[in-house]
Length: 189
Length: 189
Image (tube, rainbow over all chains, first blue to last red; front, side):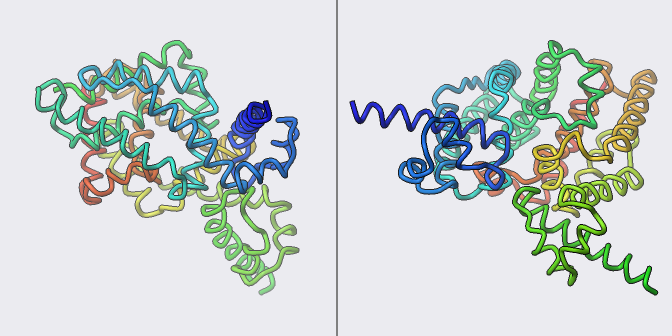
């Protein structure tokens, strides 16, 4: 019962921290706001996670692990795969911001990198096989193709306001189709 | 003489603030570090810029204005234009991080948006004309094409560490060529 309570508290802290970090980043996040939102206290945060950086790593690592486990990746259908990744960003708008904060404030320290890198290496091998089978252009090395595809799928995430024109002129329902079409042009043999 | 000193101080503060904001963002930036690096003091920062946000807006607005004035954009040669933008990011690595911080911490507040949006609207009209002349695909609306091109040119800026594989496998000298080739595939009629 005590262990179950502890796990429930830990999960509430991770959920509250996801929202706080997504909004304010690491330097801007307030540990006391996270504690209050999770009906916990600062002492428990330091007990479970060691530090604010440790809490961020737990939040980011959890999302990265879930991404690695759930991710769909079909190298014989890279446009469809891009559509899947696009949908995932749309369903979890906080993820795009978390990734940006991670790149700016924490890149190089998070323990989750190894899992992400292994997942990327597996994708690169799948793309290489699809190239050898003639399904995908060999104009780009497989690692470059993966980087370009992931970049395009995130194109609409957290658009800066000087692209308000894109928001106005392009109905939200059309965006997925443009990303898929762009990846199709990029990868066609 | 006094006015010239004041302008020199202001320029030193802007240069020091560019480095500090690029590294730490707005919440993480320390006004006293900026003042020390510029051989100035906090009172002068508040006198010239009003607040830490005001200082960030001056830094970002200055770079945005310079970008708008200097930018090369030839809609009849979008791959070459992408190469030019890529070079600009390579020459000014602090800009990519500043843009990310701006998106996360300050989007919607900076006065520089109007100038950037006008510049983007002008580019969109150029792309529309190139489409009507048959030089560029009409598969995408011109605003979408601009967004996709700018996304691709920034693909290598501040690569996250789980893409270390990209750094290892792709020599730095080859990256520009891949970005240009990707944009060529995207825009061909």
